[in-house]
Figure 1: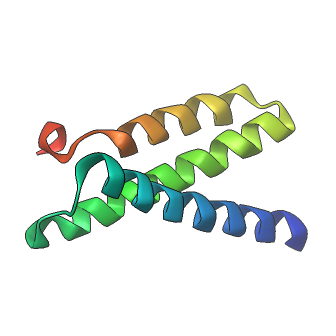
Figure 2: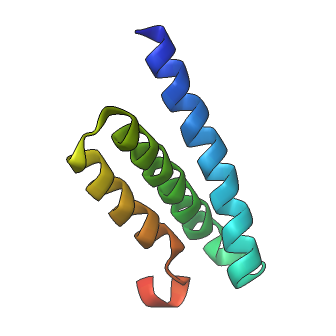
Figure 3: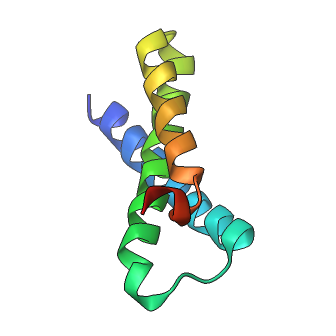
Length: 82
């Protein structure tokens, strides 16, 4: 079981860093007062990406659907969420 937990933690970390990079490329530097929302959305991308990978590996459609929804929400511009 620890191998599965390590894989999930690694995937969330990698996809969160990828989410930070993607949000920086797509939308630029965030305002200082919105850094918390920027970080939250990047974590949302990370968890969504990890769920997508886990869903593809296990064949679980619920994980695929929820991961897709989280990744899409994480990539939305901040203006749509305020």
